Length: 359
View 1 (cartoon, rainbow, N blue to C red):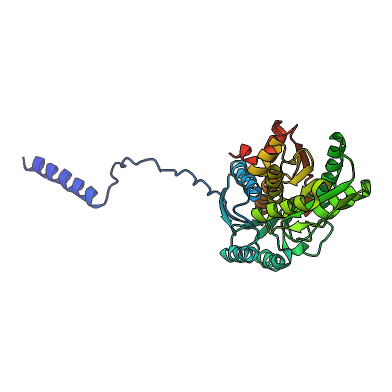
View 2: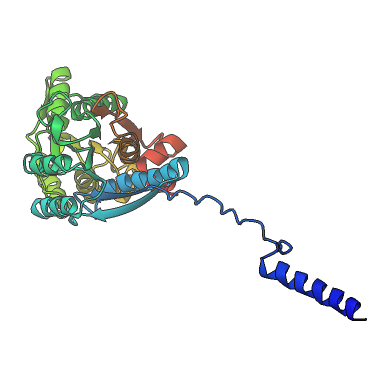
């Protein structure tokens, strides 16, 4: 009995000793490691400021529609985010306010600035400052210099425009063709109207005058009158020309949309639509209605939408690539003649009214 008890106690002691020596326990169940999915890369984000020279003018609003559509297309194509801001004065005449808006845009430090200037002599130094700070600066329609100059090439990235001389030549050619088509003599007086003195846009008037007088020596093209983009002043100028020249007045040429509007209103009020050939440049709702009604015979239209669109595309691709993708710093887009006869064809209708293209 004692021997059996001793054996039991010995077994118990051995078990306790094994426990004290840390005999391995059964392995505990473990959870599978959690593998986190890689984080989605954040989209590149670009701030672009459109420094317009007029928030009220339909022509510059047409440019803006091109930029806005391009921004949407670039976001979809490249997976980027574009913050688009518009600043600038109400009218082109407020040139000091335009320069201040440009300076404030530079101070805000965006990735890109798109602009159009009526005062290149006052703009180039501000644009140079922006460029020196690494801001991509593109100009549309009205830039720092004409196509045959490279004086300010280091002050901006890209410029899309229409050659002013081409506008003047086309207007002169269409004017003489319409005189002939309407059985009118190529003799008499032609009045000219424009917004303001701008050296890069002066060929719109100079080339019109040279073309008409060169092809028809009996036509006298009067010196251009300037309205400072004031519609009432433009209308008054033309009404005075109508009163002063009477039946000798055979044509009127307005080299921008406000001038075209003033011409249209004056021609309608005077009841002389069948006695003069009226040619305008650029479009807005007033000019479009006047073209349809016959108070304007033709509008020489720049591709405002296309210029704005290209300016935005180029700015974003320059930022993405680190350099300007264009092989030429200045790109010319040809003007188009839109008449009462073709204005409702889709191609010409969109040139006249780019709001039809707005996304």
